[in-house]
Amino acid sequence: MTRAGMIWVAVSAGLVLLVLLIIFILQNQDRVTVSYLGVAGELSLGMALFIAAVAGGILVAIAGATRILQLRSQRRHAPGRPPASPGPAAAGRPESKPGL
Image (tube, rainbow, N blue to C red; front, top):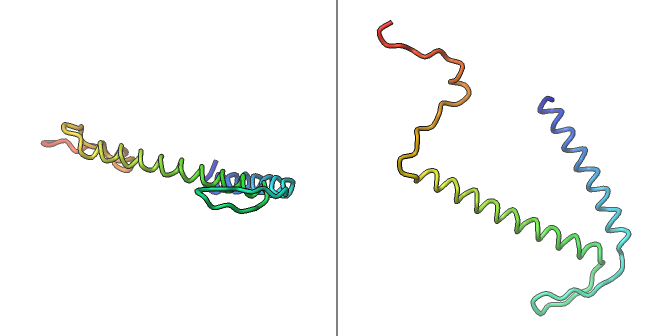
C-alpha cells in the first residue's frame, strides 16, 4: 500500500470515529454536576466523558513521551555501545576494498 493510500485509510477511520463521537455526545445530553478541586460546574454527560477521555489521552501521551526520551538518553550515554549501523541508503553501496 502506498503512503497516500495509508493516509487515506487513516483519515477515513478518523472521520468514522468522529461521527461516532458526535452521535455519542448528542445522545448523552443530560446535565450533570462535575466537581474538580473544589470547583463545580454543570455540563452535558457526553461532554464530561469526552473531556475525561481527552485528559486521559494527554496523560498517556506525556507518559509515553517521557519514556521515549528516557530510553533515547540511556542509549546516547551508554558506555561501550556498538557503533551505529549504516542507514538504508548505505546498505546498497558496494564496500570499497583497499588494495584492489
